Length: 150
Picture 1 (spheres, rainbow, N blue to C red):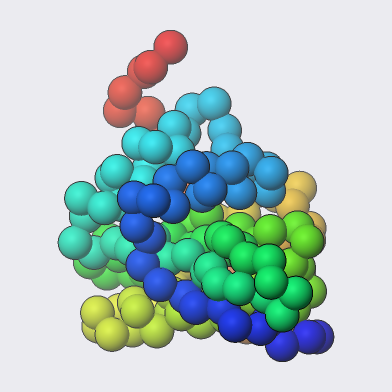
Picture 2 (picture 1 turned 120 degrees about the vertical axis):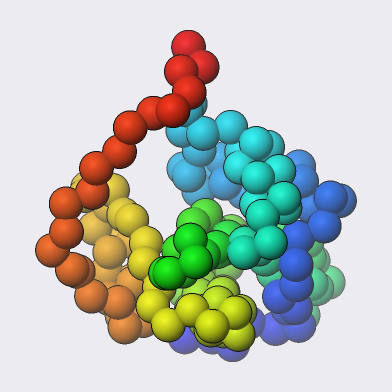
C-alpha cells in the first residue's frame, strides 16, 4: 500500500458539489431514488452529520477531489454513507483514512458504535470493510418509503 501524498481530509464545501457528484457517479454509488444533491443538502442541514472530502495535490502536480465519506448519527448509532475513492487512487489507503476520519468524528460526538449497509452483491466493498475491522451482524433491515417521487 502506497502512502497517499499531500492529501487533506476536510469538511465538504459548496465548491465541491460537482466533483462530489461526479465521483459518486463514477464509483457507481448513485441510484435513481437517491438524488445526490438532496442527500448533500440533508447532510448539511443535520447537526449530527458531516460530509468529508479528501483533496489536495499529488507529487506529479495533479490534484482535486479524490475521496468522500458521509457520516451521521441517529442519536444512538453512527452510520457511514457515500465512501467513494477516485478509481485512479485506489489501493493507496485513502478509503481506510476516510473511514477512520468519519469514525473519529462520530466518536467525538459521543457515538460508540458505527453501522453501514452494503448491497449483498458488493463483495469487494464487504471485503474492504472486513479488512478495516467491521463484522457482519445478523440483522433484518426493514424499510418503508415516506415519499413517492415517481
